[in-house]
Amino acid sequence: MFLKKVTLLRDRIPAADQYPFSIPAIQALDSLHFKKPICFFVGENGTGKSTLLEGIAANIGFNPGGGSRSNSFDVGASSTQLEECLRLSWLPKISNGFFFRAETFYHFASYLDKIERNDGNNFRDYGGKSLHEQSHGESFLNLFSNRFHGKAIYLLDEPEAALSPARQLTFLRVIHDLVKQKNVQMIIATHSPILLGYPNAQIYSFDDNEIKEVSYEMTDHYTITKYFLQHREKMLDELFKEDE
Ligand SMILES: Nc1ncnc2c1ncn2[C@@H]1O[C@H](COP(=O)(O)OP(=O)(O)OP(=O)(O)O)[C@@H](O)[C@H]1O
Image (cartoon, rainbow, N blue to C red):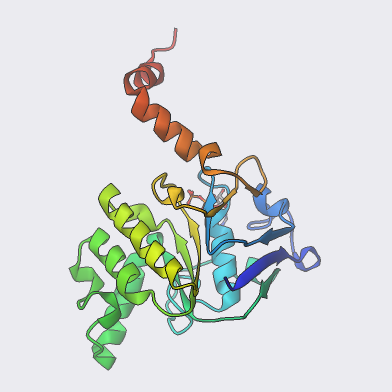
């Protein structure tokens, strides 16, 4: 555990009615305390998970488009304003790590191809070949399995996006092996009820216009998936019912 707390510095907010400060969950934010090595951000689409993750990543010094401190490529990330209004409290401070963004992964792979051509590292940290020459899911998992090591903080935005359910379980094992070494912290925005099931994790929900801690069983991801699997026909009947 390295990052203990993120505080929103209200006096630095330039315009409360404009993005990203206009997002209800950000408006209600005072501070977030991180108590476990693995913390999930969950919530409905558009509730601000990626925005906050990007702001934290940029404040750490990671490339806001994705990657580490040493990577630099532009995808038009818009976190700068939020980054400047966050205070991060560390014990101890570290700067090693990676910001994974499923939505900009293609750009990261292209950027990597470009720099690998120059320094000829043979994609050592990425499964031994260009990420573009691997399937979407293979490239995600190779990155997680090979690039993630040592004392580090990882911010991951929807790492499940390309992973099959079986590979999500493999990823849980990757997380578990990193946690066992006791020198990792991960903050993961996800919609996966499988990933969310990682034991003893902290879960912050962005629903209902606030950011609050919830249990696994309280998340929509758990309840809706469980109900669907147990009552599929009934749920589909309800969903497809013609209006009278
Ligand atoms: N560059 C931007 N300019 C203006 N509004 C934005 C911008 N990026 C995101 N938004 C808005 O901010 C809100 C939060 O977006 P964000 O991507 O952080 O949500 P999210 O919780 O990560 O959603 P999802 O689960 O769909 O990834 C959304 O309403 C979105 O439309």
